[in-house]
Image (cartoon, rainbow, N blue to C red; front, side):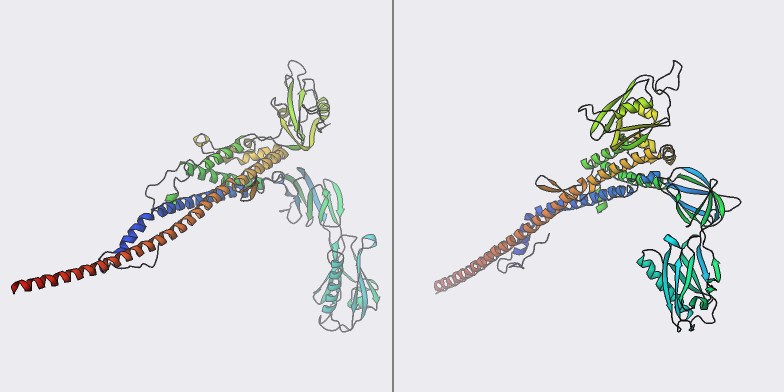
Length: 599
């Protein structure tokens, strides 16, 4: 607080001897007590804002960890692993590969006979690559022939051109052709050992270069041609040749995308390998580990803030924060909601699901039948496009009869067609719905037949810590359990985990998003934490305004008090003067009276 003014009196009264300034300060000090209370409120609010900003940052760390986990492809990623065969020490010099998440897990034996290569030729050697050649004329270069030919380009050579100049002209023309055709340059030229080396811009046996003198004999003079034929061929135009699982194949490029579905091969050189397309769980494992770490840091913070007590006589802002959020309702609700997201089974939506292979009826064939799927009639419920239908399953049903029931199913309430599709192939039933299917499977029929999806975090290795009976709410993660689930049913893990993490992301948004939403005629901040921070900041601003206005009033009051004290001092001075005059008169009269009596 700072109350200032230009006091009318800054020293004790001359006549009265009273310290009017000190008296005014005492009065203003007493009247200023509300400001101290408001400033204490501001300090407390600012400390709470700081704590909630920490709270928000921890939530945002959780959200950041969810970025890749919301993508189904994170859990279905595939990798190509190689084992060199035939005495090779490494596969890196033979072949590499990348696989998309849609690639099928499988094994292939691949032998590279030869790699694809581009046609390469050379001119004769000259004494000085920068000296004029004395050749003039025109020639063309074309790559390939027929419908798939590239080019031609035409090069004009003057007698003053050097070997380096001709090389530059070739590259400029080839580059221009590439730009015009939105592809790579037709050919490339470079000087090596005072020769021009020409390389075709594409690999493959059908992409050989054809050089033709159209005006003069420049190509003959350069030594590219001899009697119309290529004089010095460094590399022949060549296809890649591979044997894959005993099948010989050729391709004109070393990057092969059409040999194995969703796998791109990159041929490096001759050799033999075994290639395994495997599940690549690294991204999923690292992502979940990051999520669990961020989640546990958030829960640690919540648990500490809810339980800590206020410090008596705090010496720092750190200690002043203690106990401010003890029992805070938003923190309690956040902890409860987070635990609920982890513990509550998720009704996962899927567009397609394929069952286990079952060729027989579901119920027992005889009293001793131990392979029966069910012992008694059962039921399950399917939800699709806002509708639901109850499917009755008899012990005599098979996949064929159940598929017919599903295909003919209608909404239990309205009788409208469910729009579901069930197809049986090789003893398996594939259930699909374009709008996303969810299930209620109280009888566990779908679970027993492989149609039910993963529904709980424990199935993917995420569980609540057992320490202190799980009171902290913190999580632990088993990589082995996740790997087992991904190996057994990667698609189901992908659907469950991605939808769960998307649900987490939605909840975090409800807590920390600072975007505004309309509620009736009012515009409010969406996130609960962000909204509370804004509310406290508004209160701090309001208190600032109140303090400022109050200080102005106190300043004016002090001026009035000092003015009143100045007037009092003036009056006292006058009264003192009058008293002194009266005293003087009285003394004079007394003296006169004394003189008369003595005479």
